[in-house]
Amino acid sequence: MIRWEAHTCLPLHPDASFAPLEHYRTAGVHYVSINVGMDMNPLSQILPVIAAFRARLLAAPDRYLLPDTVADIERARHEGKLAVGFDLEGALPLLERPEMVALYRDLGVRQIHFAYNRNNSVAGGCHDAPQGLTALGRRMVEAMNAAGVIIDCSHTERRTTLDIMAHSTRPVVFSHANPLALVEHGRNITDEQIRACATTGGVVCISGVSRFLGVESPAASDIVRHLLHVAELVGTRHVGLGLDIGFGEPGLDDDPPPPFDPEYWWPAGAGYGRGIRQMRYAPVDTWKQLPEALRAAGMDDNDIDGILGGNMARVARQVWERPPA
Image (tube, rainbow, N blue to C red; front, side):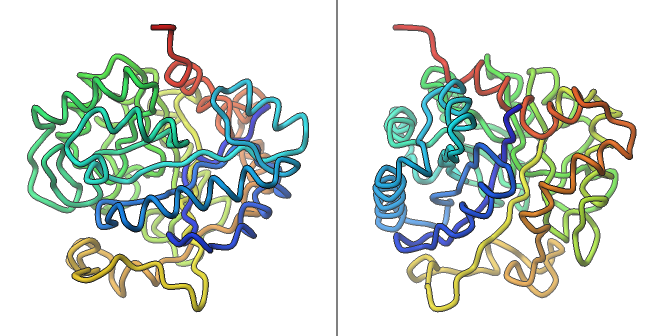
């Protein structure tokens, strides 16, 4: 069965090391979605990252594959390769043009969310005043459905996510979000949001970030606690995993150009404490520990296969594989 990492973050720099991808491959993961840009990143930063990552992945066909379908990921699994897709965190890179969605899809972006913590002209962010999905946002939802790109509601405020899920004709996901019922933080999501996501046929993928798990040093057992809450609420078919590891690289500057204010994007008043760079992450090897941890929690093999990849693969089949025009 496919093992699916719904979201992780290499440095946003064309020269970022691919060592973390190798670590995922040796941990038995078959598909990884890596971030290639956020709302604070200009196109002058995003496009060179996409171009460089694509070129380097295509230059190593014995190790990597840029998938178009879930069947491509299955092929990568059988051949011992890692399938890699890209995701965008926020709508600002779309330049308020819905047609940009299809362009990014052609470049390998398979998943996009509409706001990164702060409000924009498309959607509301989870650390800003509630605003809901705008008229332009509804057009973006339609463009995402038409282009075959997964809509991701992570980092987005409650009202906006409910608007998105009501408007989308395809399943919607949270690629890295945890239950607010377990840990109070603006990045975490309510039971209402979890139920709405499941109603679309979507998946809530649990993050391995310390602050959102409510622990100092995340372990497999902490992730399972959050997985179980979602499973008990909406069933195991709607649970996945997005560790959201931020792989820093000493000496490699991937900050956006000035003016860039980290406090604006990750406000201390929203519970980030010492700041986003001090977050701790569950390690990649958590993937090796989760099957037994889930089994100990009472999950059977079908549940485990779904949580660790099958559920996201089901969503991708429904969203990526567009009917012919």
